[in-house]
Amino acid sequence: MAVAAPVHHGQHVDRLFLNRIGLWFFFFSESILFGLLLSARFYLLRLDIPFEVKEDGSLHQLVSQQLGLIITIILLLSSVTAFTAETAIEHDRRTLAKWMLFATIVLGLVFAAGVGFEWHEAEFEKRSAFGTVFFTMTGIHAAHVISGIGMLTLSWSMLLRGGFSSKSHWGISSTVMYWHFVDVVWVFFYPALYLVDKV
Image: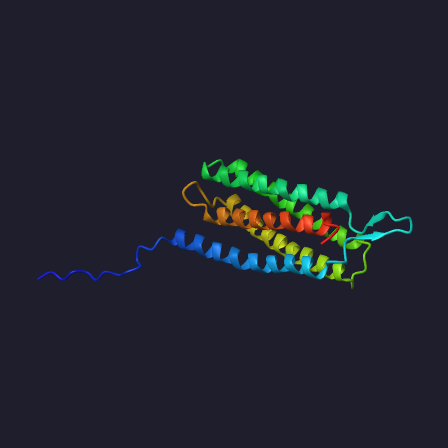
């Protein structure tokens, strides 16, 4: 008499689906953190703004508008190169994927260096309300950028060693999704820190 093999439920669980769900839960939790930082900027800084009034009544900018715009453009460009790398590996265009991942890493490093330069050149009192929120928001965001650069570098090194293909590229896709998330956060941080003069 033949005995039926036991059925193991969950044996055929879609691992990629679970990975994606987990990543989206991570994004949700991070969104709460960044949302609270934005709330603090608008709640605590109703009168403390990134400008000071000179004796002649004109406004003096305490943050560099030019630098803020430049690093924002650089970060947005890095999303384009990251997307191109992901699309390339989906079509097995490995050489293009390698170069685009490398370009994303370089642009990310330039952005991080720009934030560091802004910290050095900022003219406001670091213990002021705006100074506290500015350093907190840009610091936490920069930490995410640096971790993203680390993930991109790991993916790039694996790609150089022959990893990933059009059928298996979750490592690159998840890293690029994280990079896009960090970029979207900056799209909200940039106007809140550089462009808003009244709350």
